[in-house]
Image 1 (tube, rainbow, N blue to C red):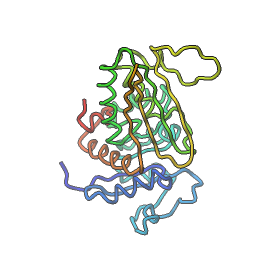
Image 2 (cartoon, helix red, strand yellow):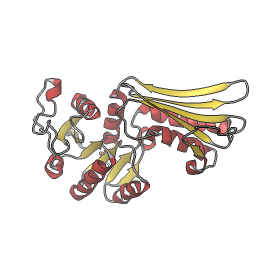
Image 3 (cartoon, rainbow, N blue to C red):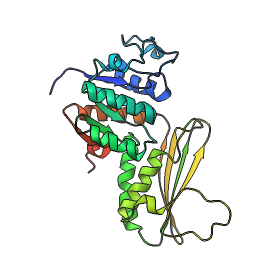
Length: 270
């Protein structure tokens, strides 16, 4: 394996998550910031990508995908579905590997990512936090042990700017629990309750969504039985956990030529 720094580009470079990713890449001794992308019209275009840190990286934020990815080995993308799909096409063309943390992707978009993974290596996960991915393993164990006599609810909270609901992480939690129970989440999820709903169907998995303030991301799975309840939670106090996990995923891809991977692969949890 090469000892040269891993050359990483960051999409959404002027956003909250983009800046956290840039800071994480620049703090990693074995990584180098090699590109910074943002949308056309962004006031950050042309600026040094590390300027917000009071540092100079020599990498300027651009909306030109090909020039922004020209020197990169891996792109980390936490943007929106339409942006991610545009980035995916250019990454395939240039042979750039991809770490995708974008949520709200449609089934069609996920299928396209899987198709392109036959040509380039991709890590895709609704949550790049190491802690959240350990949480998923705990949920699998809990769901198998509590498969009878417990009602299951998933509660998530995020900042007022989040545009999709439930969060990708909450959906992944539901999918993990449903799979452990031998179910398909599409057949048992309940996303809204209003009015006279009748008694709760014990075979369902319920979701509750909270949006407000600057909440970075709280997720809880509630297993409510008779006389007891079990809550398995993860609360993010900073986006740093997502950034560190993303850099770890980028390192995982260094020696991969193609394939679609998840954080389970990155963390050896399979």
